[in-house]
Length: 624
Image 1 (cartoon, helix red, strand yellow):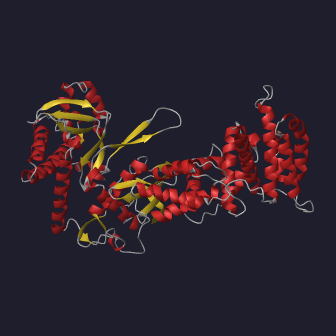
Image 2 (image 1 turned 180 degrees about the horizontal axis):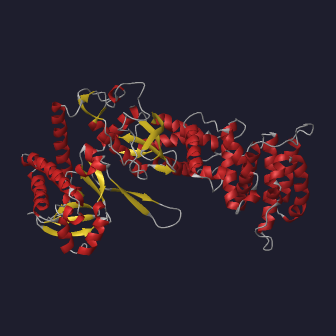
Image 3 (image 1 turned 180 degrees about the vertical axis):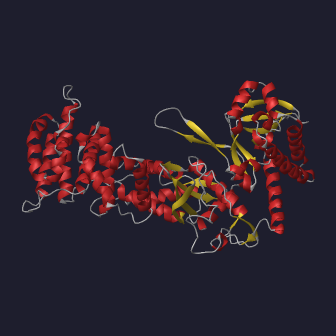
């Protein structure tokens, strides 16, 4: 229950945000910028997609109606109405805003079904009880406003008003009722006022219903309708309990529940306990807060792949920071920017320590607490109606920073720093056609590894190695270079040897590393000549053409590549430097080694990448 208590904590520290609309901005690689609204739900409220809005005057008379552009509306709800379903749902109305079948006294006339008379009666009965409470409520503005709504629904025919208001005509209304389209229409009420404050966005109304419904539940505990006991989330005793929990937490699985309500059937606690309460008891307020905070955070900063949702957060005072490992987060972005501006990398730099200092400096500037907790959770909805927690981890921000710093220290292969995008890494490993299921599994595997052992699984290394040594299989050179760079990073983290440094180490004479350097020199020499010739632009170098064979039989293949390189050496102005490097590297290889022609390991990719980068860096410096 620890992760549920953390969500309750998020809710308590962000109560000032209740009902306030904020926007998450999306920046797609192609297309226009988009945004998505999100709000923190108050306790005892739900989101309802309202298709129509009816405006009333202060005296409860009809003032107009229209089809809404922003259907997502926060409305008060009871436990039963928030999860209603099935044949008996027509007798479980929401308190104020709801479907027309509950609100309209003339609905039965239009639908021809007498049962909706009972729907309307239940709605008025519940509404009337709420108004009795509000009559003594300190904020009489709430009472007067809702009294106007009550007066309207009791004294007027809503469908008739919608018809005369030309929202739809008589024949259209009849057809929609017959086809059940109107049956699904939902209505929200608003009272026109000089300040143009919308009733369904006003916190005064949220607080009033929450207070009233809490009183209703307390009354039920006295009569035996609601239980009291220990809340396993907070540890508090004598609190109002619930076995019915909110749904609609995941946007793409609206009916999925985290905690099931039908624990007396199918696969549940059977065989272990006699009743559900013997397994666990959860407080109503805690359940409401935890689910509301979870949905708020998921919409605010969550990340989705297939059926899996990723979320990371750190509560910093009243702020809830996004510290995702799957997608770029503000702290890491700030640190990388500063790192690029202030850190000069060479073979002697302790990259991990420098990166750690920059991260901590960024955290201190943004008032993060290094002892505060970072929480990471993964949720999955594999079947309709259910979702569960498949992974949860909590650590201090200090530990989180240390893990990140260590990882970026291990994967740095040159002087360029960029975010290690796990989704892009997955594409690099398996190709652009990877399915969502494999994508989610791989992203999870990588994130757990980075925050855990930091030992890269061989299955991932093998897959990306086989792609990296086959440049001819790519449609463009840019895509292959990205895969080669990612592969080099992963192999550097895998070997994690002192000899393999951040930049090229020309004193490291490992066989695979040295052969990688040789191939890089041959590649840049031929590439330089081809780029300077209009007739040969876009032509693949021999180094790339033979790379796959080179990885399997380096010595034999090098003889072919070196022979083909001679014409390019004569044309390239850096031929003396290249020839000298080739001689030095080849001389460092053990000619007596009987394994000299054996297949190369991942160090070959690191040597290739670092030698290419070193060549162009020195070339740039000499030109300057």
